[in-house]
Structures are given as structure tokens and as C-alpha cells.
Image (cartoon, rainbow, N blue to C red; front, side, top):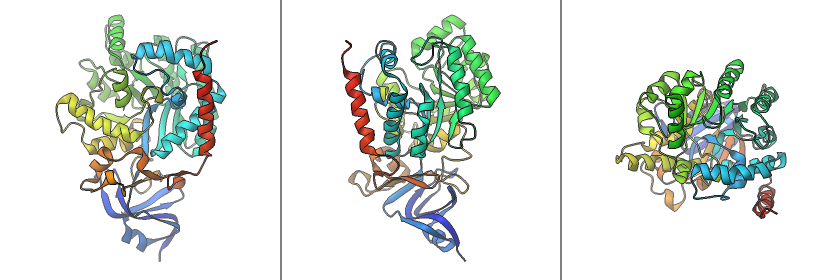
Amino acid sequence: MKKTIDLIIKNSYVVTVDSKFSTFVDGGIAVDQGRIVAVSTSQEIDGAYSAGRIIDAKGLVAMPGLVNAHTHAAMVFLRGLADDLPLKEWLENHIWPAEAKFVSPAFIEAATRLALYEMVRSGTTLFCDMYFLPEHSIEAISKFRLKAMLGVPLLDFPTPVSKSPKEGFDRTRKLIELLKGDDKIEVAISPHSLYTCSEGVLREAAELAKEYDKPIQIHLSEEKWESEKIFAEKNMSPVSYLNSLGVLGKKTIAAHVNWLFDGDIEILKETGVGIAHNPQSNMKLATGICPVPDLINAKIKIGLGTDGAASNNDLDVFGEMETAARLHKISRNDPTAVSAKEALYMATLGGAEVLSLADKLGSLEAGKRADIILVDTDKPHMQPIYDIHSQLVYSAKGSDVKTVMVDGEIVYEDYQLLVDDHEEVLSQAKSFAKMIRQPAS
């Protein structure tokens, strides 16, 4: 007798990204109460289950939802505002002044909706975010049903919303209390970087993370000048310095990590730090190249991030997959560096590992939450298919995502957003853009 469940996906090319990188050319997925019950051939799934809804996914690839391991979602409203500039000039002369002038609860709410729309339609179901007023992004995240890790930026100097580090820590504690018991949104303690945080702020961040058993996220060794500055001041590498302060651990998410000193990789491995690699943002700002092949060889956790849309300029993790695979081949003069499977892993299960969520998601396996995307292969650039993993990394685009489900609930179907008014989202973005582009009076 067949077991009745909520949903069956059948006739799909299933890419599981499990430990064996199992695939099913004519595959099926059984989903019940938000979780994956079974992944097998369509014939076996049909023989074992009946469902209230059946999706015939012929011509589609079913794969795990993508993980954006590092971004600043609401910065979509600053997309294209200041391009083709070095990081320091870009931040200090353009981005920070714009944020000081325009960041507000209304800005965060509207910008987050635009960012979520962009992420959903390109297959992202989980993202790790560091930006101002995250409490005002929660409603939009819940509406889109996405999973998120949110952090209040902690800096030594005043920000658009906090006059002091103490205010930043107070906001962080309030966010933790606000999200207590939420099974989709987590809080990450978020000291911005070594060049914006004093030793006291970094130590307090580490203590707060330990107190609440929360992850820490931080920008680390993004620029060469940043790493040289820390070494000159502390007589140790940025990685060694953070380790000496107790910041590094299994729940630490280090974004960028482009400039490493001798011995740093061993420290990262020993402490269990996860790396959020942001290839497109790093390339655009010319900040450096993360030594991903070395990190892979050392078995260090690595995920992919888009960074903010102001420095990328999109939130498409498919683009990051392709860029990561190509960048390290040319930088190492080695066509085998960062294979398609390794890039795909970083965008899915690898990202989940970096965010300490791999036991719940990141691959299509029984017991995991049903965060599944369906990618359309009936397009000229997706045919013919010889190696499905290579096809997803080197040929697929975020715009090929046809359907997205989170915890088994469909939020984007047949290229249409089901959980928000996309026209209103775009209209709000255009209205804010008119205000932001106005010259200063």
C-alpha cells in the first residue's frame, strides 16, 4: 500500500550533491511536511508514494536550493551607484556617505524585498546577511519563506543607525531575543572587519557569540593593505590575530580571505572556520584572489557568496559558481583547479557547512528540509547534456530557474513569483532610485 504524502516531483534529472554526488536521470523526490522523504528513480517513488500534488519535471533538473554564504542584501538599492573604484575609495567616499543619508527602516524593507525577489528567481533559498536594521528585513524574509542568517554590523565608529559599538551590541541582543525560536532565521554576531573593529569590540563579539551559541561572521583579509596594516600593528597575520582573540571557531564565517600568511591555512583548519568565497566582488574591486584550491586541499569548509549588489552587481549564485570554477583555473594556470563538482558543492552543501546548517539542508537527501529548485534544460545553451554537473556550472544561468520551493512550499513557479507582488517590488526600487540619484542640495 502506498504512503500518502504532500508532494512528488517525478521525471526529473535529480542532482543530489550528497556525499557520492548521486544523480538520477529519471528521478523522483518524495516530500512530506516540509522534508524530503525519499530520493530515487521516478518508478520507485511512484511505486511507494501517492501525493496530493505531483509535479512532472520532465526537462528539468532538480537540485538543492543555492546558499549565498555572504551578502549585504539591502545594498541592492546602491547597485551601480559607484562602480570601477578601489575598495577603500568606494566605501569611504561613496557607499558610506550614501548609507548615512538614505538608510532607514523603509529603505531596508523595500530593498530587502528586491533582493529576495532577485535571489529567489535565481535559485537561492538561504543567505547570510550583514547589514543595518536587520529587524526591518524579517517581515520580507518571512513573506518570501526564505531561510536567512542576519547580523547587525559592529564597528568602532558611528554608523547610520548606531552611535557607538554599545548600541550595535544592544541591537544584536534585541535581534537575538526577537528571533528566539524562529526555525528559518538565525542571528550571526557580526563584527565588520579588523580595520573597523578594535580589539575590545572583537573580544566582546566573541564573548557574545559564546554566550548565545551563535555564529560569528566577519570580513577577513579582503585587501592586501588591510592584511599588511594588521601585520605591521600586531606583528601577526590577521588570521593569527583573530585566533588570539578567540574569534575563530567552528561557527566562524570568514568572508573573502584573499591574503593569507604562512601558517594561516593550518590555523583555519584547526579552528574549523568556514570561508565565504566572493569571486565576482573580489574581481570587480580587484581586492585579491582567495586561495581556494589550497583551502580545498586542506579540507577547509568553503561556500560561495555574492557580497552586496553594490560591488558585484547581482545576487546570482549560479554566476558565482561559474566564476569560481574559471577564476582559479587561470590564476593557477591549471585547468583542473576547482572542478565543476567542487564549485557546485560550494554553492550548495559547502555553503550549508560554512553556516553550520549542513545537517538540515544543502543536499537532496531523506530527512533534510525540502529546499529544492528546478532548472530548465529545454534551452539552447543547456543542450546537449553530457555531464550534468558541468552543465549546471558552466552553462546554466540564474534565469534558468523555473521553480523554487522552501520546506516543500512553492514560492516561485513557472518563472512567476507567488509570494509577493513583483510589480510593486520593482516600482518601489525605481522610486528609491529617483531619490538616491538626486544631486545633493
